[in-house]
Image (cartoon, rainbow, N blue to C red; front, side, top):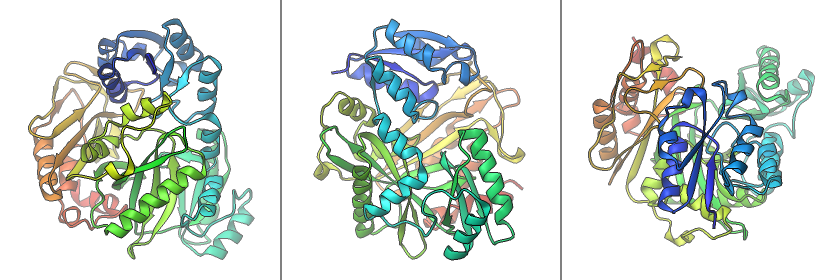
Length: 452
């Protein structure tokens, strides 16, 4: 069994991992940049190591300092959390070369998943439904125009190396395609170091549904139900819930079967997420696979009663999960709201600063995951999320009411700081959300009214 884990991350996910490790009797090593010297995880972990200045490329993305910290402090495993190096196959490989267990999939699997076009082909071969699109990347605009003409407009242009909702552009017709193609390719080259793109038919009205999977080293694969992530802005999720509302049992079963088949098709191990689109007719199509723990994993934990970080560590240690597929039965509804230090009225401009007031809500079945406390500085160098509010209730109506009550109690104040709390309350209390009629377009359509 793993004895000491270096947590190669920061903020709420680093503290989340450290808490589970403490419950399991596993030692922890936190790493921190200069900006995070006084962070909660630094105080909570058994040990902490400074790894560089605030900029991520010189700290949380700088592999040599992270590996050196792990070896110097006697860690035998590294948990990458999400973001940063969590889906970097080179980092996983360097961990292995230094005798460190990487708590996640193997490097070869991550490399396979990094090419979204290749993954799409593998999933189709495994029997998962995919949207009409290109067979692999499209290296020229002329080829992109031929593919678009064959599959029909509108089309979505996606970065082969993209992920997290980035590197995506939509062309409504042939006139728009050249600019969308060039812009998406240039963005992909600048951000991901790979300008290759591929095409799919674009579904303008969809719901975004994902399935949590867990695979052990013996080749067993399990699904832990689905989450609905349709409330999002520019492909960035704002609210997530589990189970996904409005699905039939046949649809849930089919999603679970697809997710397990897809995970096996790429030889996956550990916790991951299979993402799907659900159209108005109820048909599902595969979108992508994420090779990490997700920001929204707590809603699955709440309805399933399973600690996913604990299961990740068990699988990385060579053990089987602590459950079987027949044990997986959701109870009630859980909703997660991402609370960001952003100003929705100013195009969601980040508003970092010192938290003069930070009073999370309490009450029954109310959970707050955060890496901050009152008096802490929210630095400008990283993601603007300051907390995740997760609630559970026996049914969806009660869960919505509980989330709204908890958001109303959540007090966050700082000089010049705005948060997404008012917007989140408007979203979850909207009649369309209550009736589960929301789609991925809902937030963009609702924003002008909500912010007026």
